[in-house]
Image (tube, rainbow, N blue to C red):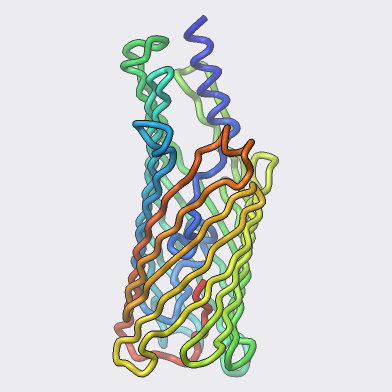
Length: 323
């Protein structure tokens, strides 16, 4: 009976769980649309994100980490305004169910390819398309479980994603972005302990952003994000204001302050500091509904670090908003 209950618990967790995604999507763009690979005016972007949940309620909090590198390639060798995007990323998350002494670790490595087509007379608009292939490894460790003594299981399977996006300048002071992506198109089946299975349901994501330069010192960045998976939808909208500390300096420094509101009744304040090509961001998400606080993690903390580098002469053909 205990064995059956444990399997039901695993099945419920796998079947109902949605993709684990960070609040700071600006630092993990490949998780939201493969077409984002290489979509930048710079040549290379390196990003890292770390998330911690349940620290207030568990001695073994849920942890999630992500790292990626993507590049804008063949600029100047393809038709005017075009480029090839290449991205490599990896993420891992760990969860421990203390009641049954179950530990789960997911590791996912991903390769992403995208093509960016410059359109318009001045090539300040781009249509992008991307594809993604991943290798998924999931391990459930029940060696210390009273229900499944000495048992453990591992899953390995490929997974895929695809997406399209538009980005461009609508005026000298304003640029926009919008994109749509589909993940898990073939809905892979996960089999646990040889007897229980669950299907990874498709995830659809729509992301839009708008940047507006108010002056040399002030700018505004607004975003909207919609995720749909497993019969539920989550909408988030937010904005951040950026203030340039030394707009005339050789290495400009910028401070950002803002946040996002989630339709799941959560707020995520956000702060970031940029210096030259490096951005350090921090956010703290919490639920505003008292009933939701009782059944979901009280809060989650995230920290991100993003570096963008340019090794070739800048081109006027790339006007991509900073999401």
